[in-house]
Length: 313
Image (cartoon, rainbow, N blue to C red):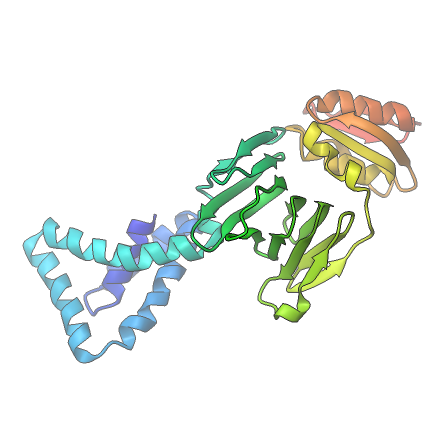
């Protein structure tokens, strides 16, 4: 994908591209949303080509002219040059593209514990994806989606940072949870302290959290949520969904994160129904049966086999 986008970018950076080339590029972009994204990133290089002096532009055009005249060797050289600049920049900068090739991931309903190269431990919740990078300055987990429990190995020279689109959480201690949902990130501290900063915000907007603190990062803002019990906040990492007098609709939504066949329900119909208990995440059918039994709700099946929860008639 990156190679093809780099080829079009190389063509459009000169006067060599024809209308047929432009039509072919547009057709390729329509084939998949990631094609369009890759092309948009590559077109960002056009400004650099436009600002190049006459000698630089003449050099580019000469290389492309040799490509068309002398065959594949020069074509590979030109394409490789653009890939080095454009493709490397695209892969490094775009979280969307990087998320397609994570270092670690879990399937829906799967939980996985890994030990990173620095000795830190991560428990990755259902449908998660992340990268891990370590250099001389930092240890960085990039969480693309899902939820992790991090237990951090000490390394005073290299801070341990979990980053998402919404901001960063830097460990000042040992254990904390980061959850990346579709529109926001939640950070929960289990042990010691964590410094949380919204994305693209000044240092003054950062906040130091203690055990039991929980915050939400969204659109450059940090919002404090209600305090939680650190002893039970990470019980999901032991395979349990624990709730205490929670709306059943929200509990079913959470359970659906672990199910291949989501439970269907009408949230308005279930308003006012609450539930408490601990339910096994590794056996979501058993968990669903337990929720229904405790609440007195009705469990049925739709024609396509999906479970449906409703009030008993």
